[in-house]
Amino acid sequence: MLKAMLSRFSRKPSAAEFVETLTLASLSPEAFVRLAYLVVLGRQIDPLGLASWRAAISRNMFGHSDVVDQILRSEEYQRQFGIHVNQRLHASRLEWIKTLPKMDRLLDIGGSSPSRAEGALIEFGYPHRPSLLDILDLPPECQNWGTPSFNQAVPSEFDWGTVSYFHGCAEDIAKVQPLQDRMYDGVFLGQAVEHIYPEALPGILEWVRAHLAPSGRLIMDTPNRLLTKIQCPTWFIHPDHKLEYAPAQLEAVLVDNGFFVTKRVGITHLPTIAKTGVYDAREFHHAPLLHDDVDACYLFALEAMRDEMWNPVERSS
Image 1 (cartoon, rainbow, N blue to C red):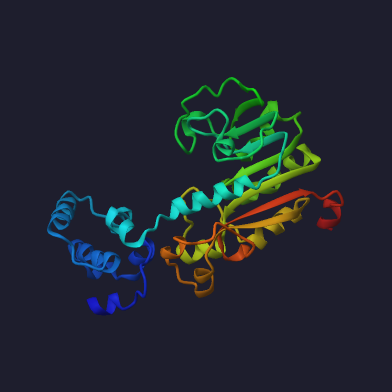
Image 2 (image 1 turned 60 degrees about the vertical axis):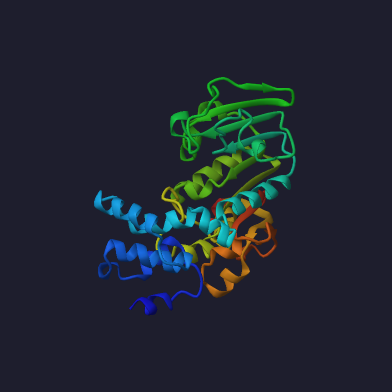
């Protein structure tokens, strides 16, 4: 039985894939731990590790995915494979942010930073400085990276401009009163659109069109469902994701709501995973940070402008 299970993996599986592949009811918790070490690390579990997991099992703190996730985070695994997927994705996003155009009046939806009043976009290396930067994010105690260490209730003044924070979810942007009379050269959604309920997205895009200058840009990046479904076929890669889009799917949403896409960028190119349909974290290690092959990248970015020829009446008829 053990050899049959091991033969199903030609490379290291994800935690979710490994758990899904096994018939869990046929394995005791300790047998699962032993098998996980064999499959992921290629060795028998050591006595110290086994004792630790036996203690966890006795305290009813055993979880199948927890076992594999802990192994994947271990120093031994990192030394053996030299992989840290999140670090590679972050490096790719930083490289992409360096390429963004100058926008003097900018709205960043979801762009709070836990420690820098300038916000995440500038913290991550945006090379330009807007004279006005508005950041819409959740209330401080609910923000993704934790409660910020600075006061978001008052604007922050820098020698290059003013940063102001506004609080609320993206779906309620039309209710954030101070934003209603502002116009922007750019609206940025960095890893945000996947957190928005898809039925609310057209209303947000309508608001953005109304508050974007004629030559302004809407810029966003997001996970690519063509790749994330290989890693997680039955759920999304983050529990708060409402929908993960394929590039053509998100572009169609933009076009249907009055935008035309002017630029597409692939972020973290993984052609082997895309071609084979087999998730292998090792490909991240030397993956090109940016690539034109958008469909074969783990993340993708779109840059769009208002379609001045757009007619919602004609589209609905």
